[in-house]
Length: 296
Length: 157
Ligand SMILES: [Zn+2]
Image (cartoon, rainbow over the protein chains, first blue to last red):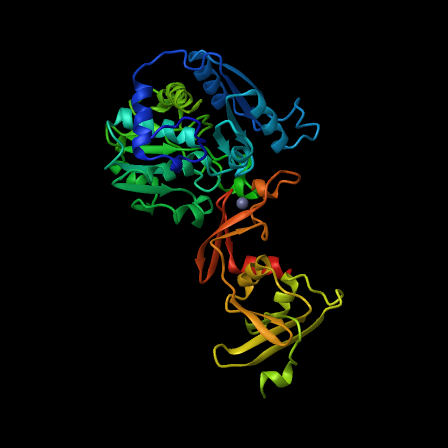
């Protein structure tokens, strides 16, 4: 199937064949000027240095140009322009619109308003499809496949969009087992659990660590908590360090969407388990492959 | 006591029958009928029904319901039947039927949902994922809306 002109709103808009085609393109070390003369709009209504820089880099490496803004300050949104109007304006200028927004469903709304394809670069607390692509790609490359592995997903599974996007993405594959490891108050909502068609169960890290092939860790993000007291109760409730990893399989890999705070100790970085910097680097080829496929 | 005795026949308008008992007031609220519009409205609650055990009936003289209004009623009164009356004759009999999608009637309960942002070009829309009990999912943010939440919103209770 062609992605040309297609909106990228949720990882579940893709089949595993679609994804693996992207993965093959991303790993082929392709270069090109497919975006020559094209304009990518980067509409970051919520700050995100990492995601934004990787979209910028991907655009530049394909010979394209970009316009856009980061966060709301200093833009006309601060003057009261609506999201809808900003999207309509960008639609008149750009060939593709990359949207990051704090409200859930903002990317879908943008896609309804714009003729240009819209790529969701994270909206609200559930969807972050390009991050999920990068995460799957990392597993695909490093473990030579995504099926039949044992996964642990650790962290804020309730408000974190990277972890929920990753869990949804695993729905497209056949993992052997997925352990959800989170403080009780950060367990996923019914809405997410209902959609999981993979064998999952709640567990704790110490118990399942020796079984894991992939450990996906996320940060607890203070700003996503509706209640600050709840954040205070759970912050710092898990921490991975090198000593703990003595019990892990030798080839277990640790992923993290970054930035990390203190959930992964610095002494883990020098172990062979630490894949998160490589994972971050994969962001550029994946976004290059995606832009190349999507931009009309 | 027959139904005829508790609610008189109407000449023109709509009879909403087989409302689950106790929900007639909610049906009126959904229809936006306060009594101040001047229609003659009659209502009985908790009358005997062969089908339901007990039911409510609402009769609105001089007003025919649109299908959008009928769909709204399905959210709180899925068993209701709609009779359109002209000249004392029932000219149309409809069962209310909950559509697969509900648009523009309900609000999403998620404050972080884009449909709750003021001044944006968006109407909330929901897919029905379960009818009994009623469960809807927001097409924008994926949050569930339960039967209690739906009834509370529509009836303002
Ligand atoms: Zn919503």
